[in-house]
Length: 330
Image (tube, rainbow, N blue to C red; front, side):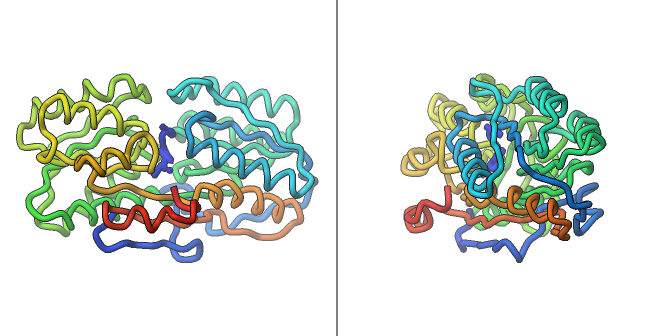
């Protein structure tokens, strides 16, 4: 629940006691996006939609893209998708594709906003040009019509609860993309929630700038700098292989663990190897369908929630098989 990673981002995207958040039970916004509880728009046609996918080839984001496409086409909306071809998110390319969508007079733009500073201005431009704007896995920007996806604040809070549930002292280091946007929401929520537990200490935070090739070196550097480190936490599923590799290379299997986002990128294998302690599961297709359905309602002049949370579950080694059996959660 790789934005990445997210989903990321995700999210980007683990608790001993499994927690479930239903679509109606949680909020996925903090900061500016939380200021408005509902969105209303003057009815206007919705005949075309562009999804600027942060990582079209990453399994979770690929599923989201497929489900956006299916939901759009089911409702007679012409759909197109754009995004980087590699394994790293490219915000510059994403912004360029959004700009092209505005120039082409696409009726609706959907994307993952890596940072409010970068994406809010173009969202405002798009809406001024008469386009609807929806974000997925966002929550930091303010100029979209609606946001759908995992609550990164909730993700951080529950990640802290997960880590605290592991017996013994947990000396935690974060690995994430950067100090702003959903990453910051996640880290800050974890840090605040961790204060209520007596066995969590935050030892460091490092940023990879969205470049997964840096993950192993960063994880290794963290272990070298902090010998007491015994638990990595990331909201980025694509960091999983690099962190696992670093733990193996340092001979720290069974001593250093990982709480991560997503069933992909070797998370399950890492769990079987005793490295991944817990992982976030998200309903990727729900994340894809939600913004389409909300924008359709807006196009009819209806009022919809400005923030639409989607289902999440957390899995450990004892629950991952049963939770993923249906295929809805990944």
